[in-house]
Length: 371
Image 1: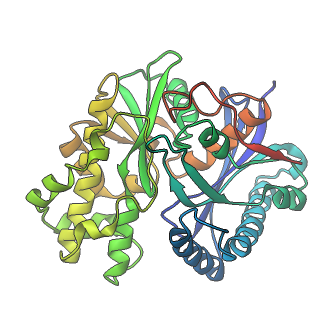
Image 2 (image 1 turned 90 degrees about the vertical axis):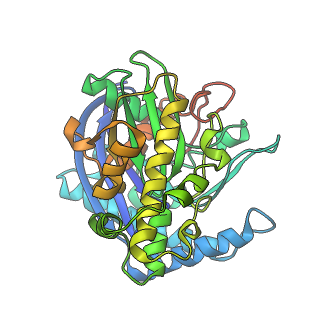
């Protein structure tokens, strides 16, 4: 198949009120070109609706009928994200006729990993049929369900794209890619055809929740709080005994599996320092689980903008740390690009999850196509 223009969409579990939308030209195996990228804010009403939806999803916890609010939130976010796609495509001087497919991840409201012989469960809000009708093009959506039905973790799904980026950058198995979103996930590529990926632990989610609870804004901007604080090393050591951190991959996390309560009782500076140090130290433990411990991490996602976390990664994970831009990548756009890339793989009937990424029994095709 010839490379095509695809649009990828992502709204992370950190729920920062923004839609990441990116153009990428690809055949689902290699990257031909990067197109426009935008960070489009939701209206305040949609953001509030999604926050309430996440709250109700935790109460629901996959038991009984879905909360009524799911349908309302699903339509609102689908319409908002459709508008973001149209704006990006028009702004790039293209029309929807130039777009082969849209990769619509949707908003994760709850994710439960498999455990003790029980299949996992996941729920992403997003109406692919409605988006296809609005935009008049094919839309790939519901990327995770097929993997979980086959016994997989349903996450992370970024490995095939991260490996393509590392291959295009000409780096080998001494370099891994780390995404710092609400949760942190890592991809290690062996320099040939194999890769490993899993969630390492929390990233921005507990830190953002902690800062919000203190009434100090949406995040620890520029790592200012953590850089001014002191890490309670004894408390950190206890937190690092959590069994998830040494559990072999495949493994995945929900956004709330590690929460802001890890810093309960601490002031804003010391709490931010502790949570940042925990994120970095958890990555260090993850590196020890890989087939070969990489000496360098290329970091994408919002967390790379936090100097405290980046410095702690170097010191506490014992690894050279580079922002994605050092390899000519757009660190904010990688996740959205990924779902454009995966959408083309769905269109081509190529697998999007693998035994060494989600733990599924065999390379597994996923996603549904509307339109």
